[in-house]
Length: 315
Image 1 (cartoon, one colour):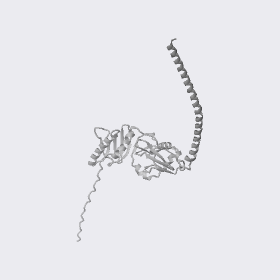
Image 2 (cartoon, rainbow, N blue to C red; image 1 turned 180 degrees about the vertical axis):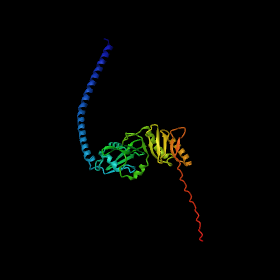
Image 3 (cartoon, one colour; image 1 turned 30 degrees about the horizontal axis):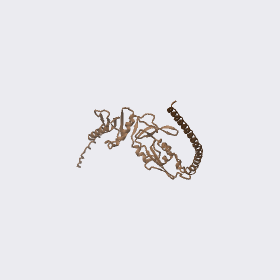
Image 4 (cartoon, rainbow, N blue to C red; image 1 turned 90 degrees about the vertical axis):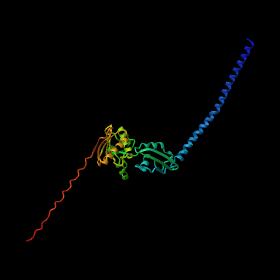
């Protein structure tokens, strides 16, 4: 073996020796760190356990105690239309004196939004003792006949529909200020069975009827007549009856244009001093119409017959 080979061998042995020493030193350092870390971890775990127990005691005795942050006031937005603040508070299930921090606001929000009359709910905790509730109601736009729970059974009742075809119960009794408002709503008939509170009746014809109800107040016909009922039994057209008894057939689409056509025919009837009895706007190229018969003019009374009285001459 030459001199260069021996030198390389010595270098390799020296490098291997250094590597083994470095690994041994690393293992010894890791062991020392482990011996130090284990007691520290035990101390930290004990401190954390003690802190948690202390926090639980503080939370139960201070933050969640009825002596602190007890509910005193529940504010409900005053812009409610047909719900009452008492109803809303009852649906939340909260009680005066309960700890405000213990309320699950997400659960209360979900419970409120399950109520058919509620479209959206928002809640806010105002420490130390106030809970604010904001309710956005579903507004009834039409009446419908369906089933409503009463006396332990489902009974026929007049229910309400909002613009999204959600079925809502009638208001509580003793609200006479709402009677006139609800009496003016049109009735949607021909829906069929299965109309129950909390459900949807979003069939194409019902959606078209609700679109008609939405558009009608903004059309030129709103000041001329009012919608009494909309029959949706026919899957292809809407059968509308006005308060004056006129029957109008409308398609399910382009209702804004059809209301304009209706207004044009109505103006013709006004100029002719006639009353519209029937109109079919589902026909696209003309407007079949029927006028109410003109009332028969009462017969004029016969003029009285004048009789002349002759004076008798006395002889």
